[in-house]
Image (cartoon, rainbow, N blue to C red):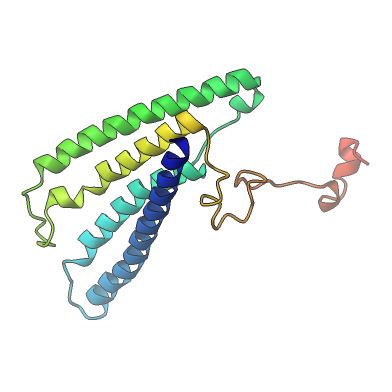
Length: 196
């Protein structure tokens, strides 16, 4: 059962990563079209801005779920890195449970928002309704809930082969960038600090 769940989460992860990537690509294409239309052709188009906003919302909420599973989200570990392993694990579980709670709240209220605005048209882009344009919020939250449940049941999936696609650090430093200040870069610092 666990292998089947992980396999489906891998597929969902790749799908969500593709959707987030396409959203980002479309957004970066549409925004310059709107700028070119407005300032060069002197004709303001109404459709680039709503499409860019929908793509940004899609990229943000679907991409957040992808980033959570990959462990590439922002985390402040200054305190937890200094704790014993048992307390580190406890803090990680508390964070996952809080993430589950927050994701469930976002899912519930964004679903209510979509239902409430489902029939309201978007004036600048009449193909979609407002409810449809907010659909990435509950969808992204639902994906995030599935990934949090996966982490709670099976642990972190950061080192799965499908998650490491495009990760050139191979998990050696968890995607963090470390700077090492060497005394040879600062003449005189070695003498002042007692370093040889």
